[in-house]
Image 1 (spheres, rainbow, N blue to C red):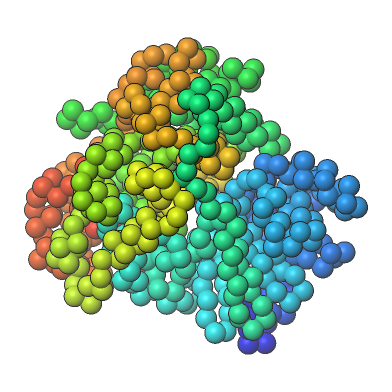
Image 2 (cartoon, rainbow, N blue to C red):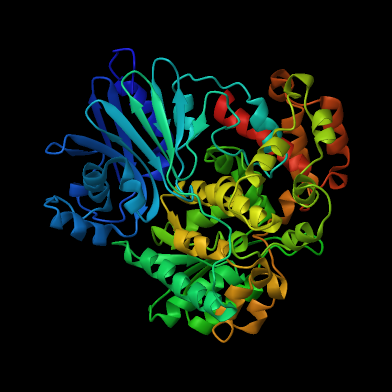
Length: 579
């Protein structure tokens, strides 16, 4: 959208669309009208016909739309809107958004249950919205001449934006497992819309931002039995609505953990036939297991799923790292990013939609560090940081060069989050921050980017907003019982094998990026000593060399590799900015 009376260039849209092409392999479209232009790449899931083509133009209502995501309650909303006199030309959820906006204006988002990022051109203004949990990404660049937006940063980079390093984001990137909370990103020229937020931009460039949802972490007056029963009801509904909103088959990414196993069990219990499941594993390193097949195989056997199992050697991983990093909208240090990328490549050969277990640990206290934080002493930030933050601020100052010594922005941001009203105690504040802010830019973004890189849509039932609101209202002691996730274990008991329910929590494993040795160490050292890295001038090379020399002495509070964190950021910049 331009503010300078210049027309939008179709060649700009074409370049941007090339950078999001893998997210939508089924169809493409462009629409321009003087000062505004939309481009779209479609992954066809609901209404596979051309009637659901995007950008979607409704000449009767004088509205135009581009949309990524799924509206789970689109069918009931459609019926409601028909009663108001609206006539539909498709059976898509896309058109439901258009009509809902015409009926309810900016408040249309409060009627939508789903994961979404969309923009609507309304004659002389642009309305942009992102879903409550931030499952679907939405990045933008704002200048005095134009507002540009896209599903990833790479599309915006094609416009020649400012790609210098954001010092606030850099400190957070190297402290919070690669999380840079909205609105910042690692690039000064790219921002991202916060979850549960809308923007209205007028022809002069004035922007009005509105937050339309903010959950509280305060108790409701339920008994323990009622809490557990309500959890079960809401989880069944969350799974059911995600299975119904599709005109294509849906599978499950099965890790072998409680969360994805429970999704399979609930599908089987609901009578679904021919459940498709998919698992991936890597090489062991020392005592570190590279797969969870021991557990996923039990689920496959118990529920007789149609299963695909993929084993990836370390020799296959390194040559594919660059591909995965090129499809990251932002630098992501989670070692399972590459795992999801390689798994999604295989899954996409069979289906277009999968259920995934993200959000269960954050919503239902599955991580070991919650108990430690709860029992820790000190300020709220100190209690959190000791068990979560990747490196002390003092080490950060040694890691980067002086121009990036602009303050402990991680501490400032967390203190602001913890000071918000609506949480009964400290650990409730942690749960709320984790499920509404941190998860957005770690596992959720990772899964979206790595699956959509192969035209595969991932849906996350444990991040259903009704389920999240309920989970936040629970007493911490109930969620944290039995070493965490007690409500889910209660549901699973008798449905899943006890060996899966009671196993020690694992993580999507990829040991080679945790214990950095051999060719992986050489690879990271080459990145960090390259002329590109030296010329960029972000890192203090003397300190970086210490980390390269003894990488296993530089592990994070959660036992991740600080060397990988440094190398990944530089590698992302080389692939996505320099090239």
